Length: 215
Ligand code: AMP
Image 1 (cartoon, rainbow, N blue to C red):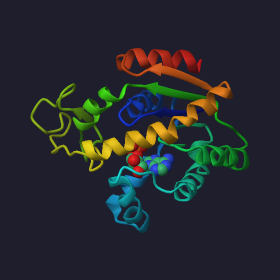
Image 2: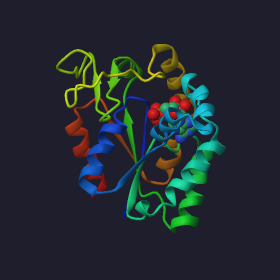
Image 3: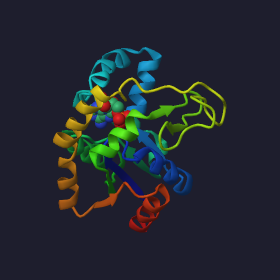
């Protein structure tokens, strides 16, 4: 059973690598960022509240995120294992996660993968990131541009830039990452669960290292 946590700055490649794991291991990926963005799009109470924090590069309060995760993790599709992308982001969330796994599923986190990428590369990746609203495909105008300008290669839909992918918001998100989220690497390293991987390597090379760690 694989219960995996992905750590890493925004744009470190967590989403890409999660995609490979879903394909090969048949386990679900849970991204708190995706859950919040869906709530924003649907205009729910949660979405309206979360959007203010997200557009300001701040973390949504722990209590809100923990409630979302408690509900999600107790769904039947998590019983075969899961990948957490973007959660936990604080030590409070990590402690709450341990508790909910023990109480709801009688299990624990088995592997923690941290993708390490220097800030200057993160800036290039994130400010050039464009996504397809239809198929979820992700491009980069500098490193991985679509064949025709600003149109998805798969379905021709106009690509969009996430509202929190601007330089100004990214400054704040990286600051949060370095102050709060990076404490988690110490926590999981002490527990012997952590593997740090150089996230500047090619996606294939990174995935090879991940598979080696999960064996
Ligand atoms: P992401 O897509 O993971 O980069 O998340 C986008 C934004 O959603 C973050 O900048 C936060 O505002 C919010 N968010 C996502 N996951 C969490 C979390 N675990 N704790 C607090 N805020 C979160």
